[in-house]
Length: 181
Image (tube, rainbow, N blue to C red; front, top):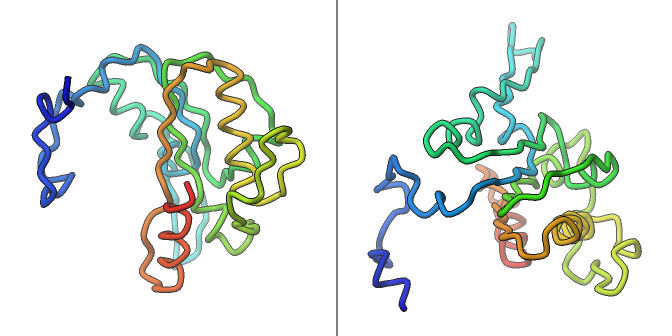
């Protein structure tokens, strides 16, 4: 069986050109855990005179809620505005056993001037004992993946890398992180 027998793959395709309302193969999963930040929690920020006056997570507007409505898959949304990979480990909340997990983290870890920390590399990962990982983005991402594997070692894990920025220097970091991940 070749995947190309089922999916029309075109190297020139732009992924958002053909969005299917059925969500394609997503329906093979019964439950999905989302480990994220404001981009996963539907965070809405309110500004008055260019000053932020309010911030609220609106999970009913988040992309996991939209996907749930389209597919009827159970989504567990472990996100909130401002979260970093480090926060998910330090809070040590219980996560449900899911068929798949989507990790959508990095913007606050790497770009939020108030709360960012060192990016690091895959060299920061101790494969024998994650407690010995360095306190970097990659060290914490490894801990998240190992936590998922402790819950369900057969779970599929999808990592969404950080988004492009308007700043060329930030884009170099974006490309580096995507390559390392």
